[in-house]
Image 1: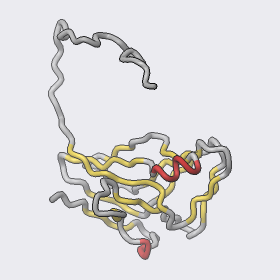
Image 2 (image 1 turned 180 degrees about the horizontal axis):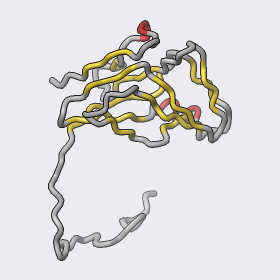
Image 3 (image 1 turned 90 degrees about the vertical axis):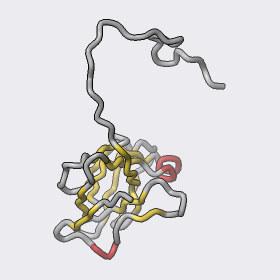
Image 4 (image 1 turned 120 degrees about the vertical axis):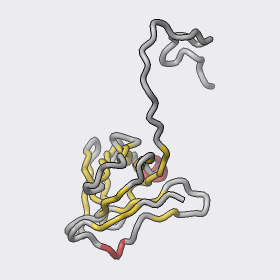
Amino acid sequence: MVAIRLTWDDGADRSLGLPVYASAGAAGADLRANLPDRGSVVLKPGARALVPTGLRMAIPEGFEVQIRPRSGLALKHGITLLNAPGTIDSDYRGPLGVIVMNAGQAAFEIAHGDRIAQMIVAPVLLPEFELVETLDDTARGAGGFGSTGVSE
């Protein structure tokens, strides 16, 4: 079992609790907006904001935490994360903030305590990089965007 150690930022609302998995089969644990004034942030269409979670974490070496959008917010309101998935490295100890963007058509309010993203713990492989003269051939070759066909 991997343990992610968490601590609260100064002034964070601890009553919001730690990240939790909403169901037994959930891969991501929900993160909540932990706003310093316990208020809200209004995102106009196209706007973005760094939303604090009130948390700091220690991730074991060999792992990362990925921050991903919540599908319901994306579908219903166009709320996404600008750098999705965001990566938190094992050696980072600063505040955990989430870069939220409104790609929707209407202003969207993020209230204190709202679930704004999900975090997933994943292993990290650190391969060696090796310079070679040529690469092996594949059926796809150098085919780029859309080169493997169109889905219908």
